[in-house]
Length: 597
Image (cartoon, rainbow, N blue to C red; front, side):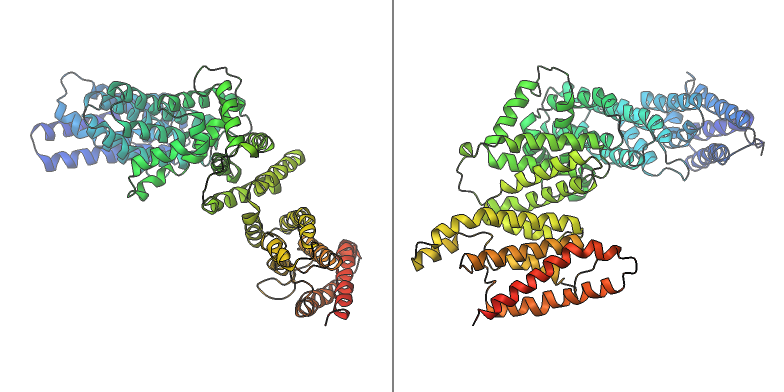
């Protein structure tokens, strides 16, 4: 393909002249038609180039000449403002498409769009630029198209004279939607200019706040939420080379400091929640969806600062960070709130592992240094924090399961257990039970059942000492304080050995979980039997019969069937430990049934 005949300077000059004449004559209908023809011409050029051509150099030269012609037309001193205003509604979107062609076409497109920003109404330009970003044409949904539009919007913000908060509030969702779409599939070299424009918008918001001299707290809150959101979006695209992004992240954290955010307020989410409440006012859920990553951004900001070697004298400096960590160690509620904020990092599938590793290190250090004696004895309903802690433990599980580094997996597991131990025993069992029932990974279920067993082991000796005081009433009091030695603990075992969907568990897929469940049952049965207790009711005849009939016998048949169909003996070897424990459980049940009336 060669460049089409309609790519010529004469046709463009005629289209521009037609626009000028119809607008000058006040002929609204004709002016609309003329502008539409001009846009159609520009679209035909950009579409032709984007579709591919054998003469790429010739096409690029034609595109450059078209943009140059438009720019010189617009800056002509004789051009009437009414003409410029009319063209401003359509041309930014049309010329932004040319930014995808080459570097010099990008620069020319940017010059044209910026010219409209300089000479047209800022309020109109906010709407025009947002419209251009909201509905890009097919084939132009990329960073080259959006970058000049974002840069122009940054300039427009600084030009707003009246009601800047309303204008900025209306525009930011469009900006953030663009950034999320582009940065979700990052192209490092292409996206850097887009990221710089996003930061330029932050600079513009900073400038507006300075001009207003701290008089608009809503604008400050909106500014802070924007910075938190783009912090998360940019972090999602950094890849493995995190060190080179530190300057950008530190720059963003400076904005947050200016907005009044503190290290403690970020890591606990207090100040993030205040900003959200100030903007949303409780009735703008749809609007606030564009700030869905602000809590993740808060955690990331703290982590980037912690990763940095920069010695700052601001609120986020090293000395303050130490004080904040000390406070988190001594205040359970704020510590749990920090866990709830950090969970957004652990749960993310896009953030680099370097950040997740540091998030684990950060929480590990806090949990390891807990001073339970300094925890304020507040009369609070701890249960309100359980959904957040449950979600955090689920998120840490992702690190345990998916991290490629075995040391990170181990540290994540140690952190998991410390967070779990920080939860009151009365609520800990419910959390573990929920984690078990909502996990579909055999290895993770096995680990969680191991945690249940460990908790029971630590709890039982204390209860035996109380039970052996040969006072029946005392035994009832002791039993009322049990958290794990209850009837409900057998539900954990049943969930694995007799799945809710029916039938025995799937083998060999769930070998780890089944083996762990059998070991837990064996431990409970032996402990209750030898200690002459029956806290879990495991020794009741009806329970023993049910276990034998509904758990163990079907499992024995399943194992026998799997082994029978195993031609090379590999499955038999894998199932050997499970089979050994299974038969030991069967023996124990049979023995206890003999001695149970």
